[in-house]
Image 1 (tube, rainbow, N blue to C red):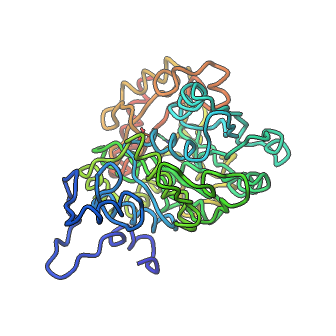
Image 2: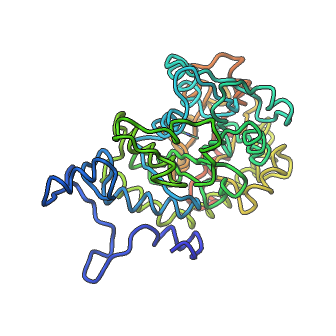
Length: 424
Ligand code: PLP
């Protein structure tokens, strides 16, 4: 399947029914799987043979969707998780335990920031947040002896900062550690971070990948390219006693990272996706290429409209030539970035609220990256825990309105914007 283009992989990768089997990916709603002998079952537990034995670790519906996403990103394997948050946590925790350190871009989703800054810090993992616009020298300065990885978002939510992936990957590799990238906003349709040096990709599949707002989910994808035998990662090269001494790099080669994420962390943390959710996600993936095209063209139309509106203070959309991230967006996502446009209404916070409450077609929701146009004021919702200083570091000004452009007819979205802005 991997020779097909990504549009085709969105539909066909991961599931290949045999003669007489269901054409549509079935939901295997079973926690458990039957085996003829205890020996058979024991081999599965010891990771000696592949197969399903308990849905916390693997399930045929999840497996098909994981293979599809791995093909779309160009990776060697993937693992679905119960949420994007779980994907962020596991992607780092798989290689960084108490006493470890992570270099992280400060332009990240507010929930991810809380996870890192509070919860993972309480677990003994230290984070150094750096500007996404850091020079190579500045990135190098953030590293410590115990740095285990670098983390960034391809296209940050909601600041729409475009990360210079090649620069971040180069710095990470110079220190012998991988670059983990949250690729939720562009999706692999618009950007495939492995092609620019990223080693691990994660997503909140709750967003565009699903696109219909019907399930919360996440995924971790392994490029298979990082060398875990470089001496810095004994968890891959020394025996894991909890699996009768398995050495991940010896047994699983270039899939060591993603196998360990499953057999070690999914086994112990249990943040697995539900088969029903994987089925719903798969339906979303089937139309992802089509939807992203429309999201991007609608968003550009909206951004251009807002840019010339006299009640709008500023507009940020990487597709606009006026955006300071336009050059990087052209390099990393030349076919379009995403459907999210951020802007400020003249009059600040109060004007933003009046505008939002005047919208009729677009609804005020916490969600983003949905096929229905939706809107949010991050400073008073998703990012409300952040101090003013942290808001600035995350690229979220108090007047920032996050407008997530859907796939409705563009003129209906413009008409809605026009009447809501008139109220301000
Ligand atoms: N990463 C990004 C870029 C997000 O926008 C979000 C949620 O908005 C997450 C991760 C967390 O994902 P979830 O809400 O599925 O846990």
